[in-house]
Amino acid sequence: ALGDEYQISLFPNPVQRQLTLRIRGAEVVEAFTFQLHNSLGQLVLQREIPRQHGQVQTQIGLNLPSGCYWASLRSTHRVVALQQLIVQ
Image (cartoon, rainbow, N blue to C red; front, top):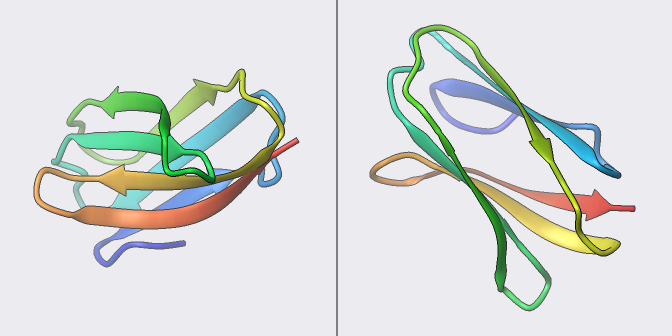
């Protein structure tokens, strides 16, 4: 899990079509932006995650070529998590 005040999980990894993003923390009061970049640094997917209280768990459907990607989760002011993701 990555992030300072949040526990962030992305699973499964490797993934095929359906990715689950879970954010846990005392209070998830920020809105987040989830982004996926390919190995060339191009943005291939972006999803807004609205502000909520408590745990956030959301499903993200993927329709991407197999390969290595970088997943990032950003709050308003900073990158909260950065993780490599393998799409099969």
